Image 1: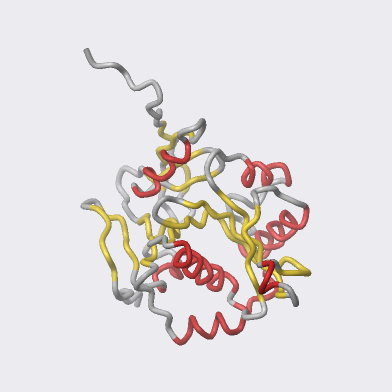
Image 2: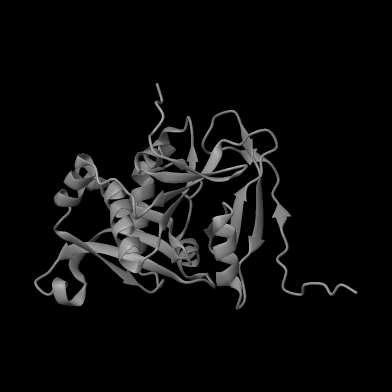
Length: 254
């Protein structure tokens, strides 16, 4: 007699809502809860299967007629540090990232709020309160950190810590095979620094130091301007119906 799996996750399907990436389309998601002592293991397995984490929920698109959302992960060991990427690193050489526990503070929410108000004023997170933000950061049963980016100080080489104002931050999960960038924000008044790109590059370097082969970027959507930047980090793997496929060159978007 087959015994039921007591800890088997239960999956649910959302109702259709407007797609945030492609105009005129609707989206649905399948999701499950990441709770309990096995949450980390489940997050690992689901991340490799194209799921993303938000608080204590893992989700992935489940649209009936659309497959535009494609999970992307950067191949760390073979990553090509282009001249443009090296310039971004050099421009932000005065910054250092420190991984800290997921404990939200007022400066975190202030940066988050400033970023949304300028970059995504009409997005799905635009109405998030300080309490909502705190839940996003600390409501988790998996291994995660807030990586803070500040100016280097005289002791940063020894302590690994920066000083002064918070320039950018990333909520990042540590998986068995990589780092997963759950959400990242930066000071919108510092556009010339390309801080979004810099944080991705820093995560690639971090994953390399940890011996992890991938950096998970979430979903790339062909035809969505807000997602187009993810195609620049090569080589990368994209999750297709037959499994993860390696991409060496970015396709033309003309």
